[in-house]
Length: 376
Image (cartoon, rainbow, N blue to C red):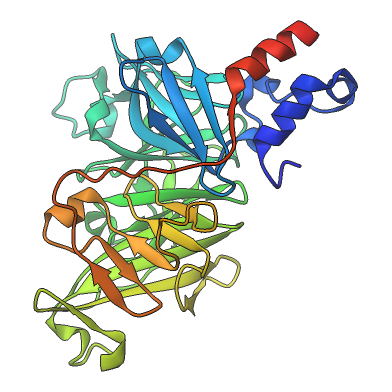
């Protein structure tokens, strides 16, 4: 049942006492159990309701309205970590993760790091990390308790990590000699098989090395590709049906001449040769397997914080086997969507894009939780 949708497990857990007596409690263990993370659910704001959210399952089309008092006193950063909402306290810099389905709240230390990570000319003490610098989040389950990784805007250190119960956060370091200065930004973290993976803009795939006793979390390369010359590239990792895909969008004059691509694989956008390509990431073999698209019944929305794969069977107004660029790229003059079937593009949105998901099933998980409490 968990392989289909964790919400179905919660509904049965709430309705059936015999099931509760013999099945694992999704709220046990301080909400750290990875089996109960809502990976296919996205969170939509409700106007005029600071603590209310509408949850939508992008795989099944299910919808649920939830209300959490924590959202009224914490700022939701607009990013998730393996389906959990990343919150920062409005009055300070305390960090927590909220499971919007179970209501479990996981607390992490305030966003401070040791000044020893900076040059010795700085005074001793702790330095606060700006929450506005957070661009994405991921969870690595190879430690106990799990490690939360936050991606940061370009700077000296691209990530910062902590576990529940830690006193402070720690910057990550690039393990490969000579490449630290080249990795100033990582994005689109994906948790798969308990490990957290993320990508450089040019397409290098990295993972966290959280070996016990290490002073810092190490960022190690799973796949390291030199960025192609004379072309610009941006890369994203996206989780899709238990596997991980890489989507790369590149453009530049060198795509045809010496770029290694056939002219039929290139499309022109506002006079620039461009290409969108998809690979399946084979982790064990450390290789990329070319794909013909993202799937005939799916579409990918590419955002740095964490791309979303949407079922076009459940949301038929979204074009199948297509990728949609984020608002930032559209504002820079790039297209809105690329369709693999006929290799066409659509014009960028004139204003800030709004995605409306019309869903068939509806429910209130707040009612579920009240029913569960009463049935006990």
